[in-house]
Length: 292
Image 1 (cartoon, helix red, strand yellow):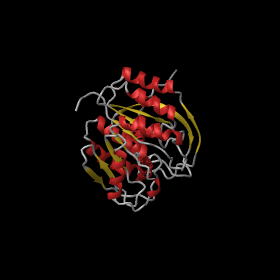
Image 2: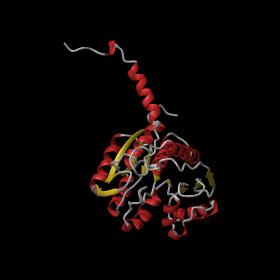
Image 3: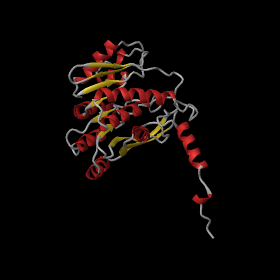
Image 4: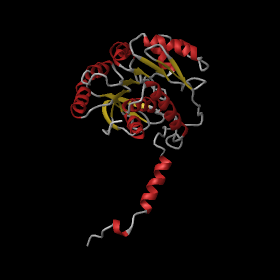
């Protein structure tokens, strides 16, 4: 592995409640040991309960953010999250041409928030499919999102088999992405299923944590996947790590933050508080200078 610091770029919207979006992405990048950069596509007034307002960033600003980062910093991988509207998708697709060839691109096709709010405008669906899907290395929908992309939205079932998920993944792959990873958060069995460009299929079993807090779990999963690709993992290993990290983040989720679905805890905040307390306890008189 190179000594150069790996850098990931997230292209997504912000979450004022700090649980998902850009905020979740940057936390996941840090947890993986990579430096995070960002291009904000939209602002949301959001909490654990609801998304009350969405305000898009101009296409010029989206492209400007990405161009300015790419001109200065070598990007190792890209994660794309909530883009919201057609104009934003077109701008993101245009800006991706600024990246060097071969940079892995992970698309989390965010359509609905954990609170139930719709985050992708209906008019933007076709643009997402035609403009972004063919450009990405891997798309990471949950099963409801994958069914929508495949034109099979009425088939959602909690007891969906892996065989059905693979069939849906093949339908999504036909839309252009090189690889499809369908996450298992909305299934009875919390299995992720990866369909790779060579036709191979890998299943990643995982535990379900019904008493956990899941707000931001999809963002955490896709950002961890991008970070592991930036660190040099192949897609299968990166997917396995992303599944484990996202599951642990849900298990440790912050149930006492907000009254809705609490945010995931990818950083293990209790452990960080303990470390901060130890650092504070080590402060001595020599670390303080009185001002006369």
